[in-house]
Length: 124
Image (cartoon, rainbow, N blue to C red; front, side, top):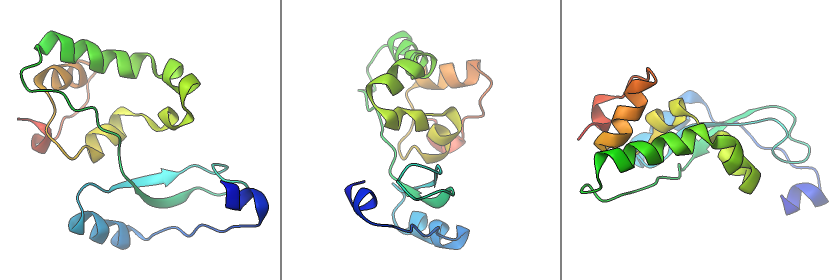
């Protein structure tokens, strides 16, 4: 951000193949579309990689608590964005497409309840 504020910058998009290769090599990466305007002078979306934030809990956490935490995160997104702009990128699709570890059964219950298709790789 500092660099973009002091001089013109250009951020190049990665091709789909480049992103796929990077994810195969390091599965913690996820495809990410950086929105236009995230940096001064970057007026078009940029296809790149991101590393998702992951809330990790103990498998012994009660299912109802994990369900309520997951529900709270997604239903109070606006309040999270008010605390940190990065929360703007929180979405069910990105979560289910980028999470590198299996989901807690309570989280799975929330996602299925809202009609999301939880990939088999995220089920314990």
